[in-house]
Amino acid sequence: MPTVMVETTCWSPKTGTRAPAGSSGYAPLIYFNHPEKGLTLGREAMPSLSISVSAAVAGDFNRNGKLDLFLGARSIPGQYPETPRSVLLENRGGRFVDVTDAVAPGLAQVGLVTAALWSDVNGDGWLDLLVATEWGHVRCWENIGGARFEERSRELGFESAGAGWWTSLATGDFNGDGLLDYVAGNQGLNTPYKATAERPALLYYGEFDDSGMPQVIEGQFSGDKIVPRVARRQLGAAIPSVLRRFPRNDVFARSSLEEVVGKEALRAATVLQASELRSGVFLSQPGGRYRFEPLPRIAQIAPTQGIAIADFDGDGALDVFLAQNSFAPVVSTGHFDGGVGQLLLGDGAGRFTAVEPARSGVVVGGDAKAVVTTDFDRDGWPDLLVGRNGAPGLAWRNKGQPGRNCVALQLMGPAGNLGAVGARITLSRADGSTNVVEISAGSGWQSQQGSTCFVGFVEKNRPVHVIVRWPSGESTRHEVPVGEPRVLIKHPSL
Image 1 (cartoon, rainbow, N blue to C red):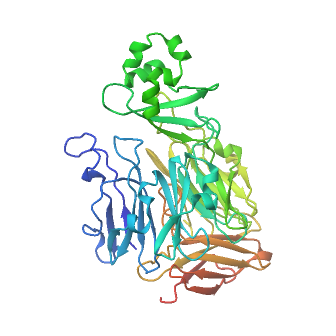
Image 2: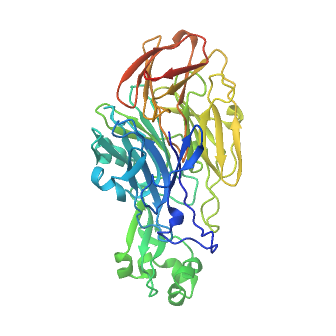
Image 3: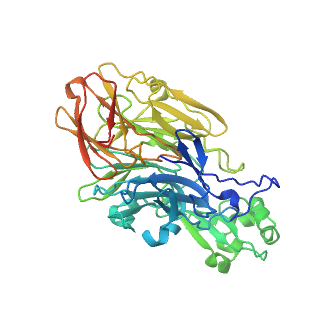
């Protein structure tokens, strides 16, 4: 399985300055892992691209045994918030071909991509593509038999959550109906920004002076009037004419955004809106649609970045851990750092209860970004590994719960997809209930969870067997042995 390494270098090693848009410094690279040679750069494997990638996810969308790639671009360097080009790359014998326009019309301009996830949303056996965007929606592109993609965001209910500053995506069956649900990270409610459908957060992009260069202006509602979000001096630093026309702060403070920058300039500008800032979960509903439910209030205390999903307490229901905070805002705004990480215990019906850090034992300070589950001591319980920006990573060992058990199921796929990326596991318990888990390559926030899923249970309702639907579409049945903390399930070809 190839390891994708995406470089979004913003600085030229020769001049020490910011690399311009279109620079080769933004070209994504791919490294292939060979048993004898180790990692080698696939110089001829990738098409010529220059995109600032924020999401790189792998999945075999046409079920030919080779992993394909979606590379989602976050921005055009120096031209935010213009829409960058994202690409769908088909793997043709180890060479990746850009098939975006031919296979998924419209996907190239999906928006400011922050995260993506290959997942079989409708359960038909073909991997669909979910994309999270900033100043946009969580969007779903349905896979039509491996031959083409159609956007189904509105029909499936993903647009109903509203436009947001979505940050991350992860999947699990939280309501026990045998269909996958989706956790989506967002900005949260503990920041200076407020947004509703009636009064969204606003961003204007256009030419507001005679410099010939576009500028970005934030707007917000004050009563029924839209006003600049920043102070006179701060706006004037970007648009000097504002200081000349508004020499006094009191006059500026009473003025609408239209009065400050001019009616025609504002009318000609591109307007972006965000109406939902809460992190939440898209729960599957009868009929195939999804309903957005915000996560508990405490989960909104900071931006959600990484998302890890597992049965951490061994009760048979999937739980969620959120890596939080963002140090990205400008100095005048300040850090969004009210969170210390949050464990949410699922009840198996789609509801979650927040666990205080003193009880969970997990406290993540700083600019937490990525989080994955793993099994450090190979005892079958899911442990946590959290990456932070500008600080050491943190690891927690799960000690388990008295009277409860957990087994780690590890899949090994066929040649070309040893990680079994795209496989779906349906687990049956002693009482006849089932759980569904999916193996993905890329989820949460720029994270790789691996090919192991963790199944918690009480002894009277232990897992009996699993049915694995492999990425090729074929299915196999496997018994779950009693007393084994870890079980390896191999593809029939191995």
